[in-house]
Amino acid sequence: MEKIYEMLQLQNELNNDTNGLQWRKGITKNGKVINWKRCIYMESAELIDSFPWKHWKSIDAQPDFANIKIELVDIWHFIMSYLLQYNDLSQAAKLINNFKESASDIKIKEWDNKKVDEYLDIFEELLALALVRNDSEALQESLLETFFKACDSVNLSFAELYSLYIGKNALNHFRQEHGYKEGTYKKMWNGKEDNVVMQEILAANPDINYEKLKEELAKKYKNL
Image (cartoon, rainbow, N blue to C red; front, side, top):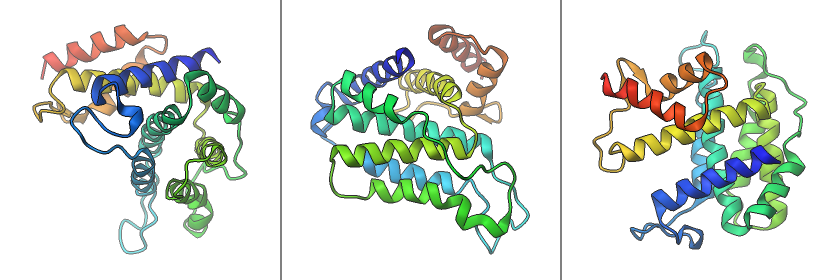
């Protein structure tokens, strides 16, 4: 449960910093409406586009599994935020713990165009759940179960989800500290998206902590 609590605490802090302390009421400090489920289904659509499902272009392309995992981490930010809007940290942690081992019957190890509907079904189910117009505990549980099945289908373990989340959370904080909202932040770092640079740092330093990761990001950003 320790890693679950850590992620929830980090997400709560990020939301406080970026949206203001009243974000649980569904509004930012600047008066913009927050809809976490809309965030979830929009990110789910982006994730689906990382698969070569289009029949009219790139017919020999392969899935971008690295980006699919990053999209799942982005969705995870929004799912945790959604849970924290309706539950205290302890309740949210228990809900997550109940479903984090959910396994998928489908394992996407290599692409087969004939199985596109079968492969994408779990991601489209996640998108559809985010469109449901209620916020019951049953819906929250269904979102969690479907999310973790989606992770399992592309071999994203809970341990890797945690590692990538810590990395993406550090990157999100770094972006906010360097002008992301103001439009002055540079997302491309010497030809690479900042997400990719963050993943490279994690791959080279698997045991890196949160603060050290931000230091490494700062070093690379300074050299742009």
